[in-house]
Amino acid sequence: MAHTRIRKFNTKDTYPEQNLDNDLCQTVVAKGSMVFVRGQIGQDLETSKSVAVGDVEGQTEQAMANIAMLLGEAGAKLEHVCKITIYIVDPRYREDVYRVVGKWLKGVYPVSTGIVVSALARPEWLVEVDSIAVIPEDAQ
Image (cartoon, rainbow, N blue to C red; front, side, top):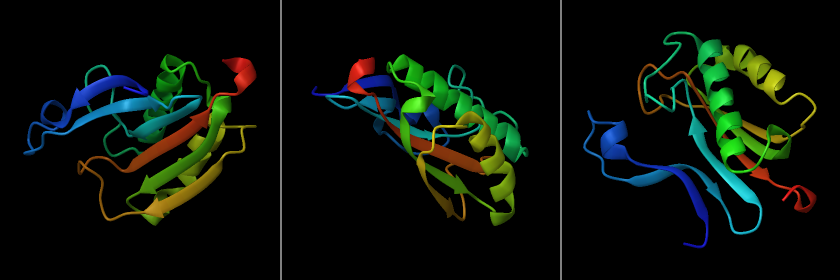
C-alpha cells in the first residue's frame, strides 16, 4: 500500500450489534507527510468501551486524548494539526466541547468546522472530532 495505516480494524468487531463488515483504521499517514485521524469519540481505543456516558466534556477529553495518542503513533504531534471537524448532537454542547478542544490545541490555530448532527454511530456518543495533520519536513 502507498500509505501507512495504523490500528486497522473491522466494523463487525467494533459494532457487533450492527450488520457491518468494513475494513477501516484509526489513522492514515499519507505518502509524504499528511496524517488523517478517524473521527474520535468518547471511547477507549484499547477496549472499545464507551467512556463518560452522558458527559460531553469527558467524551471530548477522551476524543482529544485519542487524537494525541494516534498522532504520536503516526510520528506527528498535536502542533501539526491543520484541520479539525467537530460533530455534536446538540448545539447546547458547543461551548463545553470547544473549551476542551481549545485547551488541547492552545497555540496551534487549526482551521475548524463545527457541525450539529442528529446522531452519531452510537446513541451514547455526544461528540466526535476528526483531524488532519501535516508533519513538517524538518520534523520527519
